[in-house]
Image 1 (cartoon, rainbow, N blue to C red):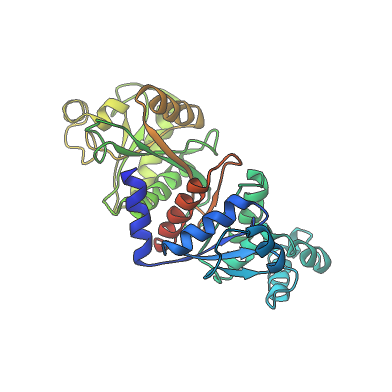
Image 2: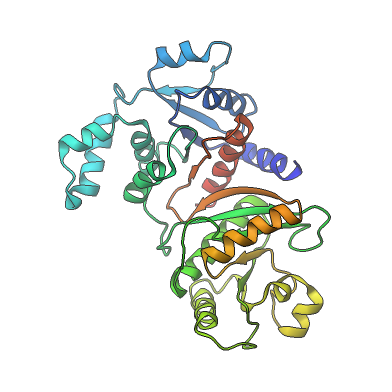
Length: 330
């Protein structure tokens, strides 16, 4: 896929260090080999070095750093950091020392300490277990109070967005964001677009109304979100409330929202709630035979991405490349 190849090539320009905590999974080991050989990123694997090398067999891990949480010199520093971050929430020194032995928690603390630039996990770990430490330790980026997700939709033979590339959010995490959260999702999605596409984001705040064509409290939320967005990120090209056709189709946009800097040329669609976002991306994926790359996590202070447990080796490599590019935008 052309998009993925571009992502990999751009990641090589300024290689980041990404930790892969699930070294017991052979797919992760193979992905570490590919990422390292192709110089997409520098890789840190977590686990017992002898066990990893035994499991790797025909996999070449030369150039991959292996860190064992059980014996790592920084384990004490990480447990102290975890205790300090969470002691008001009931964390004890003993509990912190125990949690640091877990590769997911250890990897998250590496990200927090800036010893690595990002983390990719989830091949053998439930989503909640990947993000729980992330929420508690890394937390959200400055000015962002909510973690969200985006899908890069690559629509064949499509003139909309950027040659058929559009970023949809939020499609996987927040069921019913309020106006402030919706604005923050838009800001985070714009950063994701810039990281992945290196083009100017054009953000459409979607609704069933365009510029007052309908009156409803659901429309009011999007109007308020657009107002907050423009106050918090005045440099962004963003507009709302816009119906999907007004956001995408130049002729419709100029008719329904004359003078808008976004209508008819949006490359980012921010949906008003999870119903719309999840249904929307799946409809486009199936009916338009689009490629849906994601979910891409966004809004954290440093990039941590979750894999599907059914992921392939190539999926892991691609998410590592995406995570590396996100790290460049932090």
